[in-house]
Length: 164
Image (cartoon, rainbow, N blue to C red; front, top):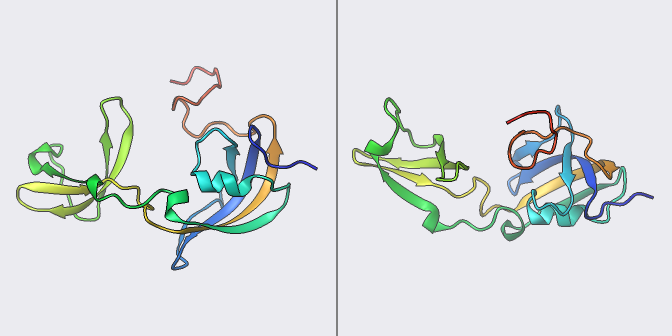
């Protein structure tokens, strides 16, 4: 019997909910999520919960914030001069923006305050501080990937198809 272990590629159907029951993500109406076990690309608690599962097995588990996206960190609340916004931008509270690090990585941030002088951004992950419940079903286990990478060129693409 095939079992989920580090090194394999496991495909899962899933639905993730917050403690209030709100669905924050699901694979319904999309292809299953493929996880390369042990590669460190998923939140640690998610991979840990999949270990040992078998094909077609279903499981529901809850991850505390520390096993998911971590606790909220007040040091990730940053204030920027309004003049640093791109020309023509109209910053509004609640708006999600992408910041770019010097090495080109994108960091999502949420505008939490705007005044005449400054824009305050919350750079915590949107799910930081949240307990997350997942309903999962293992629908595939393979020694090799069965799906193309979602973001070719993200440093993890080995497809050799010339994508940059």
